Amino acid sequence: MADPRAAPPAGSRARRAEGVAAGLTASGTPIAPAAASAHTRLVGCACIVASAAGFGAMPILAKLAYAEGVDLPSMLFLRFALAGVLMAVLMRLRGMRWPHGRTLLLLLAMGSLGYVGQSFCYFAALQHATAGLTALLLYLYPAIVTVLAAVLARRRLSLLRLLAVLAALVGTGLAIGGSLAGSPLGILLGVAAAMIYSIYILVGERVTPLAGAMPSSTVIMLAAAAVFGLMVCWQGPALPASPVAWAAIGGIALLSTVVAMITFFAGMERLGAADAATLSTLEPLVTVVLAAVFLGEQIGGWQLAGGTIILAAVIVLARSQPAAQ
Image (cartoon, rainbow, N blue to C red):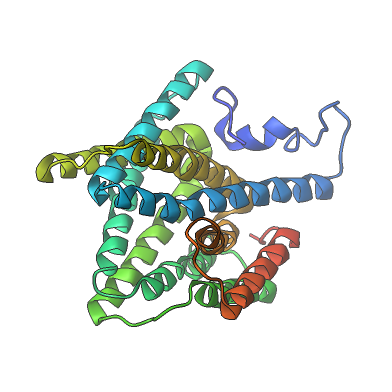
């Protein structure tokens, strides 16, 4: 979630990479502001779709890793450590600058507190509620982000956007399916995961343009890896012991972390936090489809209906105009 360049001023990196911010095509021909805006949104939507595909594949890869004996802390440590090291190498090769000062501190907090806190609440909720209810509660975050963005940034919410968010939430519930039972503690933890992730996204919307998508993602990954590394040291590691396990971990690190995070931040720079979060409801749809293809899980009529509603919401947002400030 397209990567910004290191040298140009942070606020214009992604857009200038396309020539859109300057109002020029690749050949230097002026283009209309409306066309530039539409092009920027289409690129942003493509980034979020790529991010959703990466994040949506993670549960499938995680199941493969679990089946090979890898435990959760070890998997998350390897996920962020491998991804963070790879990103740091890419930054070095491209001559990109590391964030510094207040921006660096905010990114470290996003990784060590935001990502870790959200992961802890989500996986703890799974112990007190069904997977369907936990996932549905997590996907409250597009609605939370939309409302908080409107309040904090004083953005006007159109009826079309509100209906798209509501439709995406309903579609997610149908696509996830299954039992929605859970204890009050499980519900509380699920809502907490959604709230933490919403704050993480809103902070990222402000911080990412200052550092760029790739440097921001790198710092967040390494900060999360440090915290999960301490957990692994405390309880003992359960590292991959087979080629299948390492392949699954590698896929999680590369596809579901490096690609997914960079494209999400790049898409959010172009669309804003609210629309990026709503478009991310494609993630459970990707998971359902991949589970059917690779794990033999069945897709029912309600899931098809939910997927159709999600896709409709995504198309509406992709074709809509940017939110008014």
